Length: 105
Image 1 (cartoon, rainbow, N blue to C red):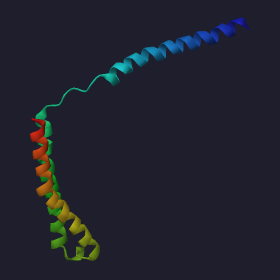
Image 2: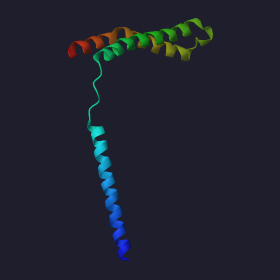
Image 3: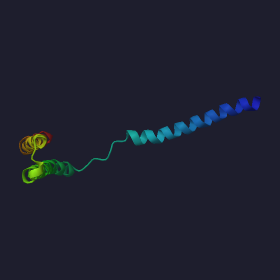
Image 4: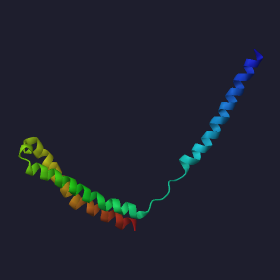
């Protein structure tokens, strides 16, 4: 009986030590800040996003205009959303990018 009583606390202590040692390793990993990215990558993404939006919405509008069987009422809603998103990419996104870049300098 006495041996079993002593074995359980020893195992518990060993497990606790192992858990504490791994917590230290993970704590360093979690609390360390990520490496800084080059500001050029962020600017590139800011200029690629509007181009991507315009290209995608242009394809949607072209498909809806050129394919006769796609010209129905439900697809007109999709076309109006594509036009709205297209205008947003041409007007709002560039102005937002300009403001973001100007305030970060």
